[in-house]
Image 1 (cartoon, helix red, strand yellow):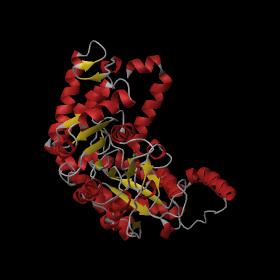
Image 2: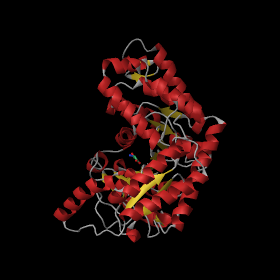
Image 3: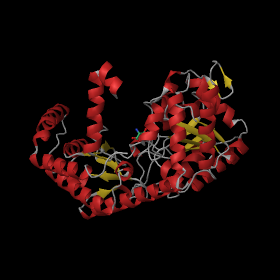
Image 4: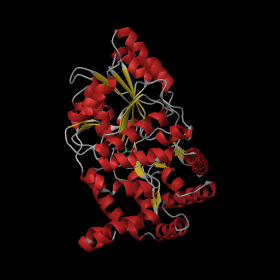
Length: 446
Ligand code: DSN
């Protein structure tokens, strides 16, 4: 970074600070990860200088001979890795990619989307009323059952009644295996009932790496369209891909063209060619045998962490995990997710506050926290470290549990303001942070 240091020392210093933060703490937000140096090298290249509106060999600007090759390589690698006939690697990120699916397939204010409710672990773009997806399309949210699990029977009944044009499966806070076959049966039945296709979209952003590694079933045989971000368990740069399966093409042979048009010119301008190159690199890395071992290790670590935390009396939504993430309902510890997440951050453990199914608390102070193992597994941590991490989490939460969080809005604001000052002085949390730093110093970033 010698040029950056010289030209803009202020930004250079902050980037270095963020690098140190990432090194010193346990990054346990389940949607975060560390890319390889090779991915970052591809990002920081001359490709950022280029405009390439359009698609390979059909551009609106000259000078895309090299970029065409890069984009084709990225597409071909994704086709091979996932076993799909069509890929678009241009979406800037997950939300634009999901928006492109809606734009390609649905008529605004008329057609219905059926996705998991945001408060149960769905995504904003799966039909939440605060997002484009819920404002411009009719939506029918489904929920999880009392155990925090998908109830395919109930979802099927809702689909039959509401007859959505698009069903979305794939979530941001669901710790269990998704049965894509059951979702397909639901969508196919609606198609037969209405005489026009009901599309099934799998948003696999969280679990892509696990699917590639073979530790989560693939949606490819069952769904029509797949959307994935590239920066979570796949460990690439920020970005997203849209894929169409053989089944999707059979349902609608123009699905690929429709998605292409929705991405560009529908929603985006020029693709970020440096990002495309970095996606290609990540896909190459994910095709190696070592990536399979990585995926299996993510799940083994999450399972170990889940069993240790359960032994400490933590209440895991759905009773455990099959994938990379854990959703903890902290109600029995008498602490909310906002207080717990901040205390953990002071202790060097970075998670996010999260609503739990049927949460009685508001989204800013929800009842739970969400944490996961993709990033710490990238650093090489294993079961032994999970045992230690669980004991630190337990100690840190003990420091802040059993507090009476006020119900009154104004009192709550005051409590939160005081807590935000006091928590940084908590000696026990600061001691944990030191111990965390000792551990993380043995596990360098890629
Ligand atoms: N923000 C992502 C997550 O944390 O799951 C979803 O877009």
